[in-house]
Length: 118
Image 1: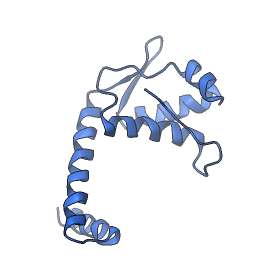
Image 2: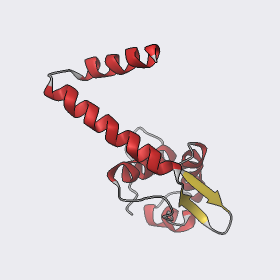
Image 3: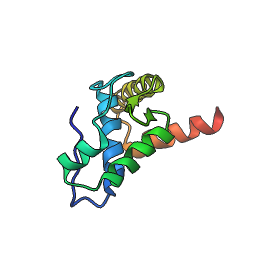
Image 4: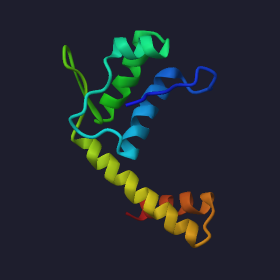
């Protein structure tokens, strides 16, 4: 799996690490049970601080997407498959809304109204 960052982007590097993993989940590039790269190796490959990678991994752990275990590293959790299913549903919804001519604002407003009524 390829985790990428853009040092020039305004988003903090740790957030970029976690976002890159989330994107890989959404694309289906990784699945439950897969191990993420070791934090030390990833930090070295990306040219960033080890603690930055660990912060990104901690964000994913807090979201329930990965399990962090000393000595085992970061492993994609079973909850990640539910996240991937949610992303698929969201993609289908957005595609259908676009076919109907909805703007991004209309799509977001529709989701908000639906959430408020749920």
